Image (tube, rainbow over all chains, first blue to last red; front, side, top):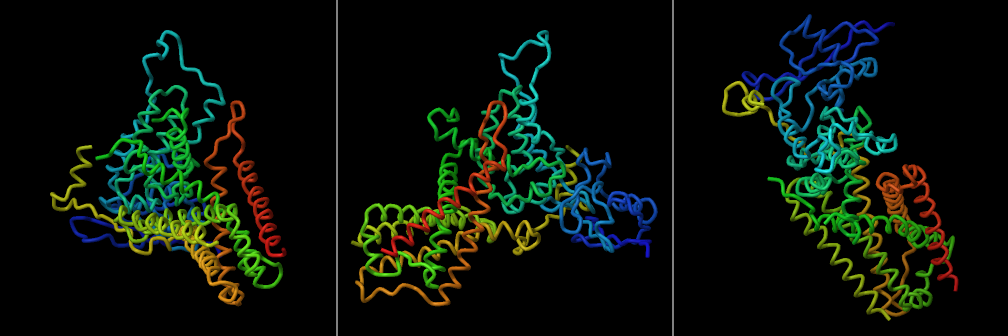
Length: 246
Length: 120
Length: 140
């Protein structure tokens, strides 16, 4: 018998009215190719215009629609309802962040942590002049940092990481992965400065390699790998006489 | 306010853990399998199952050093993991849990060294 | 940024953010968390088994009459449990070798699976060597 409808249980929180978030259940028509974001949009259009959530590209590249689906941080646009039949599908805001309203979380802490690793190419005085032409990189040079460059800042890794909840100042998986992305980029010359940030307080040494950040990452960035590699290479750099990181 | 690195203390504590955990991973299973399972079941003889062979082995300085490495790596791995496990499960008090974990490790290693080098 | 700050502050009625709490049993919430805690906890049974071994060495001072090696079924069961945790530690920790170590060959690096395979092979070789020495030491 074909499935006709499906239920979604969505977290609602209106700070003017609610002391704490509560779940509200909606029943919607089901189609085989619907994702959670489609369901939310259907609810907002036809059932309850007051439901709040972030979304944009609906194709897994903007990182806006992070939310907990049946207890796991996922992108709402990339989670098919058919994988959760017969339902209900429980949709909650991303854990480890303050909730502003419904599924909308306060990402201020993430923005500060991201900025602290200066996630942009920083050149030096010896960089070639613009007139000399573009930077050139071999495919092998790109391959060094390509995986870590896939991050879309969706914060699913922060939601999955228990250390973020236990030690809220922990700079976090995406920030460290991005610091490494720029460290490995041959165009960048601020690797040592970023290394001082990620090897200082509230950074790599808070990580106990739970590994859930990599498990939930929708882009295969593997931030856990980036953090462990940073631990290993920065320590070698410190301990070995020729290591170069003092 | 974040303090810039490198945090040499944590780097050293982690590097020591990484080495100890690798050594533990390589040498511990054989000991538990032979001494703890196969020998008590009578499948193989093990050096610690007769007084004469055990005493002779422990009397050998090379064996003492090897066993000190075995105990030290296991106890240090325990101490480091206990520090992080307590922080994860009990929350907060990281310096206290660090003291507990590494403190227990130091006590264990000291006890192992004392026992090994005072047993003829 | 200004709007976010206002929304996040407690000062305005109707704009209270809700701060979630992790809870004491967070580690039971996913298979990944449970595997992590088991991995970290594995250091405990390994250390306890080693304490038993240390006590056995200490008993050598009591002379031949005071020396009784552990042989009971309870001890074998205890050892099997500790062995399971020890193998879980070995499997998980040696698998990190592929993750962490970047061994350069020219422009590229040795594939992670090769490094891991090398680590597991080393475990097998070392285990056979130690096992053989332990048995040879007992057969003399």
